[in-house]
Length: 321
Image (cartoon, rainbow, N blue to C red; front, side, top):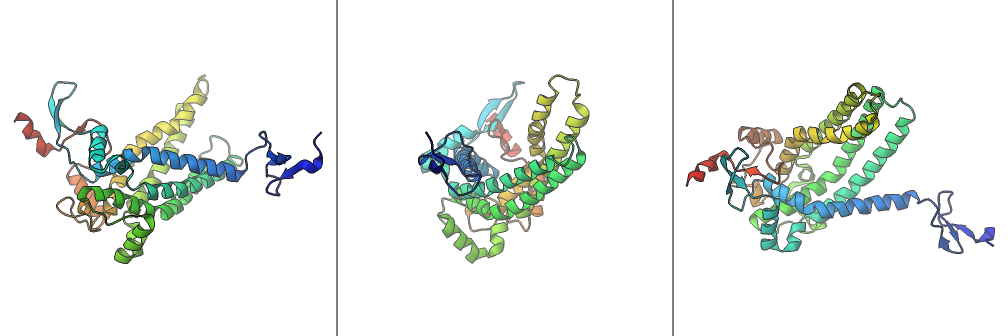
């Protein structure tokens, strides 16, 4: 028989996990610390797994095309030049740097992901509290929740952007085969010595503007569609409402992608790496200068696709050769 004295609360609080004779009770609920640790670990794992995708995407965003385009045909039979897709690009990186080369710049991204996960947890707590005060389909609730989320997103970007800059510069070294940035601490010291505190926030404005615009457009569009376009009499109305925000996120991300592109390009602009200097890239005076340049070149969505990437128009005459 279990004696009351054998029950121990591990952390001395009502939320602690009860143990029986020194063993954890498997039926006891997990503590917030355990849950947060699991979420952070999961986020870091996803970041590591998807890093090669973002690495290839960044190099494409920077305009680095080490492999020649190949002649292909569209579904209408027209001959066009296609640039290499993700798998061809990834194979090239492995050929040059080995398999570990696909994970260049991963450490600062994991740090950034961890900080973002913590802030995201706070946002979820705010959403949970706001749900108790407002009706389910209240516009006021959506505005209030989005405002809270925007504030946390701003603080999150403020905390994570320096690590984003470090990660981008580490990956961009592939273009010129430099070794200027190595290790998170070493990168922090180098950037601070050469550029000061402002060096950690190059590209911050377009990145933040894109995230805030995405947040408001996604939440408001999802609300209006769920409220006015989805009929409650439809048997699958609740299921449809559950996917609306996800679909809106995909749609809105296409519109806000240029902000991300400009932010990533500005992160390496004139920092001493070949990827951010002529002839690889012009030196931009501001992110608006960068935006206008890409707009005139028709490249505001450069890097948005991994497959079926059309070559720039100036390469098309070579198809006839």
